[in-house]
Image 1: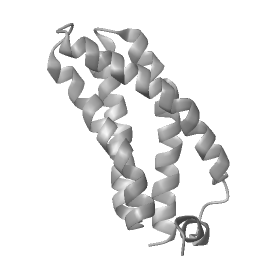
Image 2 (image 1 turned 60 degrees about the vertical axis):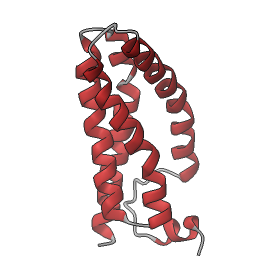
Image 3 (image 1 turned 90 degrees about the vertical axis):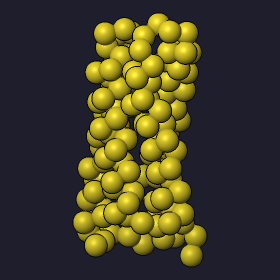
Image 4 (image 1 turned 180 degrees about the vertical axis):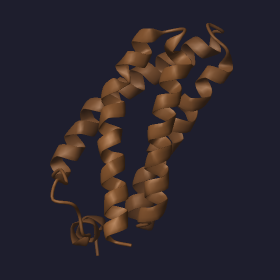
Amino acid sequence: MTFMQWYNALEKPSWTPDPSFIGTMWSILYPIIIVTFLFVFIQGFRGKFPKTVMIPFAINLVANIIFTPIQFGLRNLTLASIDILLVWGTIVWLMVAIWKYYRTIALAQIPYLAWVSVASVLQVTINIMNF
């Protein structure tokens, strides 16, 4: 069974976005994430702020990258739910951490936070419905 066959067979709430919409959202968000995170890492390594400010960005990046292998590779809904909540929490954390230094970077994360908020509720709901 392919990962899409598996995903399509799961019980999902009626408000679940179409997979193509989900893909479109990430296609919009990834350039924002790449540019802003790269800026933060470059400025952090240049000493423009304490290196500890980069920690939530690094954790978020790793958690975001491993979501798909957890969800569709391992097909582990519970671990994927924990991971997406970690992604959500680190977005809030990184926005707070960078605010003092680069408010525009923090504000640029609002669409990311909004989408991951929806994705988190969706993921946890799917997990509960298929437990």
